[in-house]
Image 1 (cartoon, rainbow, N blue to C red):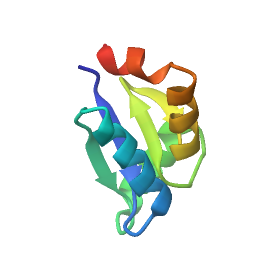
Image 2 (tube, rainbow, N blue to C red; image 1 turned 30 degrees about the vertical axis):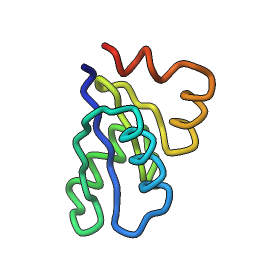
Image 3 (cartoon, rainbow, N blue to C red; image 1 turned 120 degrees about the vertical axis):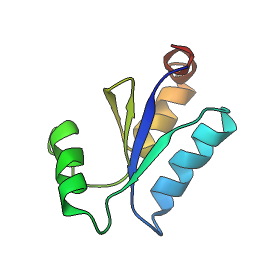
Length: 85
């Protein structure tokens, strides 16, 4: 199973949407709440190539992007193969 990490903040609709898609796939993920943790947010921004919005999603350390990118990847049939690694 792939290692999935998602950087989130509370009350974020896009975060909720991305997590729901991952849950629907039956995969486990590690959630990092960056809302009150500046050091963790800096880590996210560094890993995401400067992107500061949440969610930021990584599969096996590959940056996927945010919720829209995750859903587009799924619609194109590219998400399931990444999750199977």
